[in-house]
Structures are given as structure tokens and as C-alpha cells.
Image (cartoon, rainbow, N blue to C red):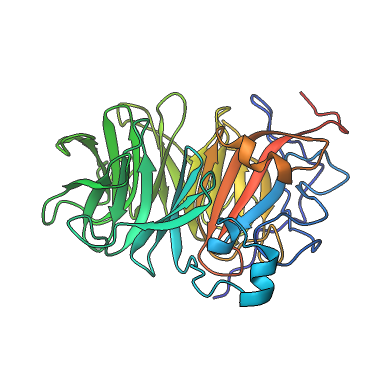
Length: 374
């Protein structure tokens, strides 16, 4: 059965996401074709969500798909004499992503490595190729304040740890312990999403020792069928995407079930194939859907507020998105892509498995040309 995007015929006027707002009607915001068709620099005409005349809250900024989008451009004379760089490196099978100190780390399952896109140094390099830290199917990555990288390797059934210099430090997990689909780190806790036992294990981030597990029984609220993605909010509540049940399950810091967000369906606030999840500082929840090929934003009460992306092959659209990440750091690298009147507050990264743009970058903010409801 084919899946169609959420129905937007029931929509009223949009209310931009604000902390403490009431239920906001849904807008399926498709990017309208404008500007350049390639990756790297943003389009000539700004692409906003929601589209005009609504006050914009997000702008599509740019995307990354190869070393050409990261590395310092060759001298024009060299290009004329020698042609394009034959050593161009590409992102082939992206799945997970993390941002840290001017670098984008992309889990590439097709190449069995983590790609490091160093925007500051203009370098495009691989991590996890060869040696004890060799990766087989890296699907998610989390980075702590020390710069330690924790990679969920689905085929190795391990969490592989790299240090600040991206050298292998440790490997967590025993045979049959888990089959990780996501990881996140909070203080000394390392959360591992385990699709084999349908639970979330919490490990010591330094030793890998198991501290506790979140595993509601089948007859209890919060039971997980196929947990695939994790996020934490500022209050340390845990958000778990259950791809089979098409919803987000929320637990308190002690692992007690709190509520569900979303359900299976094809209307606003529902899911068909939910994947990556993130929570911003105001408590808004971002969930990408690989079937709808968009990202839905829910307010802190779990009610739909806004959607962005949508299927297509023009700037701003998505093709089988798998991961969304939010960062308040790195604005200095992307302000040049923002419209002059649009003030960036934080960044939103979305990974696309296919299509011409593997990593989309959006900016959340406000326009000086508009008034926003409080």
C-alpha cells in the first residue's frame, strides 16, 4: 500500500512554534523550486517554512554531499588547466549525524565509516576504517563534551568509542547484549537503543558497564515494539521513536512512562515511518518521517506545530530522511547563507539516504520583516 503525505485539507491558519503555545494547525511545507540545483551554497532565493505570507520560522540554508562542498575550492586556473579534482569523495549511504566544534560527523553505512566534514579546516576524511575500531554498519553517533564519539554499529552489535582525536578508545557490548540502533550521551550516562530486546540500556560512558534498563512489560503503558531513535529534553525526559507502532514514547528520568506523541496515520501529527528525533531548548520535538519525507515539529505538549521539507529533488526537500539534529553551536559557519533579515537562533540538520543532497542544513530563527505571535 502506498503512503501519501499527511492530509492538509483540514488546516486552518498557522501559528509558529513558541514555548507555551496552544495547539498549532499543521502546515505541510514543501520547498518551492528556486535558485541553484547543486549542493554547497544555498539557493539564490530564500526558501522559508512556513512559506509566505506567514512569518517564517525556518530557512533552508545549504547542503553537503561530497568533499567538493567542504574542501577549499581549487584555483580557477588549476581547474582550467587540469579539470575537476578526480579524487572527489562522496557521501554514499548516510544514516546518522552529529555536529561538534565545526565538524559534521556522518555515519555512512555504504562505506562502513564515519565521515568527518571539517568545515573549519576544509577537510573531508573517514573515521573507523581498519584496526580495532573498524566499523561494519555505523548507523548513529553521539558526541560528549570531551569530544568522545560513541558509534552504534548495528552489524557488529557493539558501541564503538573514539577519542577527541578520532582514534579508537574502546568497544562496548558483549555477544547477545544488544543490537544498537541509536546512542546518546548525557553526563556519565550512555543510552543505547536496543532493537533486539526492545529496550533502552543505560551504560557508564567510560566503562560500558550496564547501569539500568528501560524495558516496560508488554501489558504496561510504554511497551516498546521496535525502538529505533532517541532524544532527551532539558528536563532529562527520554523520547523513544517506535517505528513499528508509529509513535514517540516519552519516559521521565527514572524510566517511568509519561505519554505518547503521534500515532499511525496520514494526517497532521501522525506517522507512517518515523525515524530520527531531536528536542530543542524550548521543548519542541522534531521527528523525520521516511515515508512522508518531511520533518514534523511538535510543541512541548505533543501537539503538532509545523512541518518542513517534503518529497522532491529541489533545495529544501527530503529523500528518505533518517536523522534530525538540532544545535545552538555553529551559527557562525552558516549565517552567510541566511537571508539578511533572518536572524538565526539555532541549526537543524537532516540526513537524506538518497537524492542529490545528503545532509540538509536549515536555520531556525525570526525575520525582522514580520511580527510573531507570543
